[in-house]
Image (cartoon, rainbow, N blue to C red; front, side):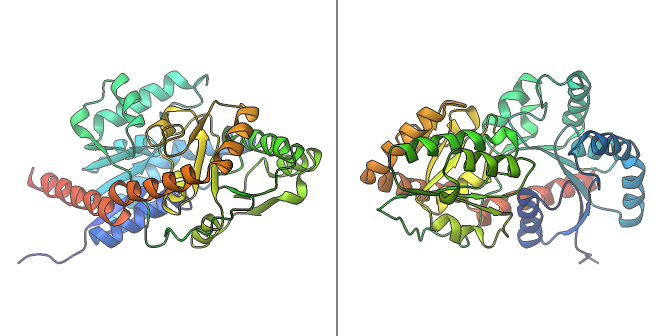
Length: 358
């Protein structure tokens, strides 16, 4: 008799993150999986919390083993090769799927723990049956680590193109810019604010919406006040993902200035909603954006160049309109959640079938 029991996946990772939610919901919707989740409870902010988190991580293996004994998952998946991915590799469950989250999970690059992280990552790569690279830039560090490339699936999870529709209300009268990255130092919101201060000095009208929360919020609010642009900046705080499409559709320019990037779902969301992208000139963005073709690339930390390119993009309306049309077609072809998550879910079923046949 053929069993009709749903296949069960144990997911190790931070379930509050939008990327994780997309991954989990996609597997439920397109793979009909039951998903069990486990994550570290301690935040990674502050020295005391980091020490507490390390202690919690050291006990995580035993907690995960108890979940496995009780729930008997058919496979285990995890985000970040140097933390949850390592725990998945240790778990003993087969098949094992891990996802690298950034250009490299060996971050920060000058950390004293880097040698240990390299050993942990090497073990996770070796034990994994499938390794997710959400974009081409992630494969560079994998090649450098001598990963078996036959185990790598290069494919973004995608975004919901029904939710993130192309109904953009482009305001021709002024720059209506939006930033949707968390308020931490690596996303360089201070550089963005300084560029808009230059626009303000030049008498150029604008509004800037900064979505999200983070450790830098109070500092950024103080900076906006110091620069004399407080009244033109809207700090929304964290908003539900369901509210994000409308906010993007009300903007005509999307800005993101990270110093490092893997594959940005935020960029895809902007491209889907006809928001013209101006992003930092780094490998993770170069995979998707060509300068003054379908967006603009800005040198890291160069707020004067950012101001210059903001003005250029706004003045060149026809270029911007052609670019956003091209971007929408690109995401429809390459970043459709309903297509990509079906491919990923089918791959997982295939892995489970193969594991059971062994």
